Image 1 (cartoon, rainbow, N blue to C red):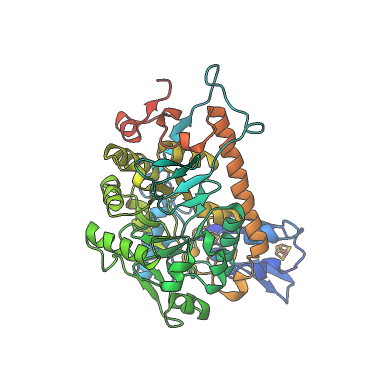
Image 2: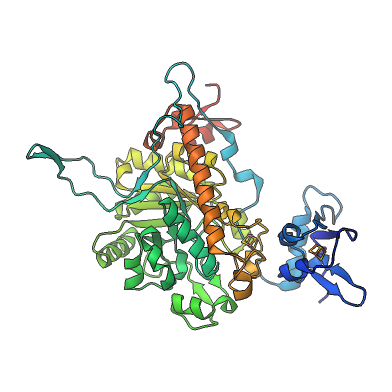
Length: 503
Ligand code: SF4
Ligand code: SF4
């Protein structure tokens, strides 16, 4: 069938600058560029270009520009180019439209409408360069009270504390499964988490045994497909996370196509080579909070009650009530993933229409747990489109203990958010298990870039805390007086628990 789809981008090559080195030909995994030997010229197929910027970055003479095809159709407010292209695509394929990375719609972000406070005159600011700033964070269930006794003149803690995760910065790497990304990317995340004193998350595809040495900084996930879940895997991590949902596709499962299931991935996931890895939408043994409780305690039992258990949900309409049930079921951590959360492949219609912004979910969950007197029973980890240290600080002020980042981490190592992860052809070697392309990620370099990102954001967090006159991140958690809203309705302000700026 002839395609009626217009090219999304045009490749503009400056022939005077081009030295025919063929770097672009070799770098592009979409076969956009080719070399015409007869005429000694590089040609480009515009229709293949996804604007990943790989060729632009690596062209030694800066000869390439990618130009967006902004007006393939006549201007129409209702029938946007995106709407027309989506219909044409489905008319040609008859399938569900897939997309990668997170929701790109502009109407769902609250971060820009939240502003932080700063000290002036009274309660003076603190200089983070000269005074200690505490951003270490402990995740896990906290006791209602601490009992201390005097033993031979020393104070001794009598209360038995639940297992905790210790984070040197309130930022962790979110779940990205082996198979969705290459081993090199998993290793880079593991090394950076270990180096900086935080955690990476295995995602739902198990953990390659070569990464067990980073287990003290790993959160191992148990999802509906139970891929790669066995006793040694559970023992290898510092914490276990039950994945109920994810922000990019609440209510539905996952699908790793058979062609991405190479020998190592198959071994790690415990499935045959080349078979599709289908994660069912529901956990087939969980139909109630009591069922969830059974799984939480089965995992605690399997690990001798030495590891915190987290439950990850997508942020949806009744997240506060769901989170309350999860905490009462015995979870030590509730991870909430907002509508802008990313994934390798999600149906576009789900990504753009299901779920709620993480900002609203954090505030309502924190508020509900406080009202019920169980906020200390579990930590809250927020995820889904955290792009900067400013977002981290705001998430914590709204009530989170820490955040998960995934897209930001991948951007740090090269991702340009081209949203084509589902093709398996990521030219940056991130969302690809092709051994040749995956080599483009060098764990030595990528882990350094990730560590630098964590360091930069941590310094900024300390700076912002200092400006607010706060020297311990604990004092910021759920401290909504440190935030004000702009351009928000009374209802939005009520849910966020904030005053209007100027009030
Ligand atoms: S990478 Fe740049 S210089 Fe090399 S062939 Fe492509 S356009 Fe020409
Ligand atoms: S991981 Fe790769 S394919 Fe996915 S958005 Fe980033 S650059 Fe594009």
